[in-house]
Length: 471
Image 1 (cartoon, helix red, strand yellow):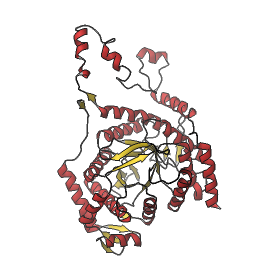
Image 2 (cartoon, one colour):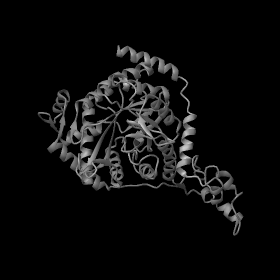
Image 3 (cartoon, one colour):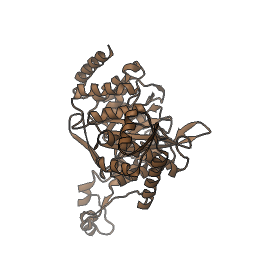
Image 4 (tube, one colour):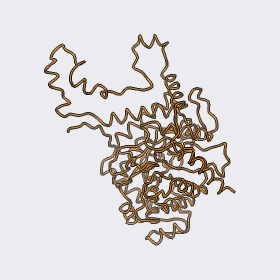
């Protein structure tokens, strides 16, 4: 079968090699600060130059880590069913989240502190929308004390979804207890992982102690993990895109080396979140070049044959508005056309402070259309429909043609939110606005959400575990 598949490529092989060489130069000459004596000893024993808390990595050590890490990772759902694969040319996957401080009401756009009930409903929402493959920690719960907020957030995630979970914690010291909770509820986490912990180094060029400790804990449980950095061009990275890419790529390679030193063969998912910094307004934002850098990072990981995680097109906009819609389309279409692996963080706006259910419902359709675009079209003999053309001839129509009857149900995308209205129908319906259609549809979806059948059992056992570790 012949198929047309549109693709985006942003770098040549030579340019990829240049970025790699510059990243190696940074690691060998500048190095990274490593805030753990044990980690520094691992680096030193492997041939890195250790000078106080500064570690400089030779190219040979980096290449060893690249070769040692698995090129692909199989991810499962909570019930042990294979969900998707990351790496080795697998298609782009998407997840909702992440760690919002506020919840944005879908009908009024009012924002309020993110609460436990919001975590419950947003996890169920992510579980119900077919374009999303994973659910990341949606928000930071404010109506529960900080000592157990991460535990209760994780409990709501595991009890209200079956899909794979990307776990982030607001307090590093809670991470081990979160893994203990998950093992208590779901058994051994390693053989068929549905949990993907997410860690950040500190840009520029610091592997902080908390990240190191959490990496070691995840590896001990046999879990894959994401190692992703957040850069702000002109503030924490060079203002030039090339400088940002080389620096952030160097940080990712340093994290990869540490992961392999902790346990050779550990599956690692690498990616960057390349923002810009507005010095006039003292705020961060995503520029079109941010998405080019995301694609470039994905190509670097494909060059290394390592799984990739990328941007979610989120953080921009004041709700599910024109600003946010533009970023959603840019990110998701570019991701599907490029080599992006998992885009785990979709749904934030207002500077990544507020989580919008309306934006998630809208993004669900954007992703579906982006995937349809990337899927392309067939050019096999049957698809040309030459027999129908010959039979109908000049002046006819294809309403009842054999090829129409065979394919009309799947021939085009049909929105569940925005009907294809003629001008007459639009006027008859009172000239509805698209944003109002989205609000109403989102509210209807939220009202119809259901919990998994084992929700009550998991909540009861999870609450008992949290009480036992809190006493």
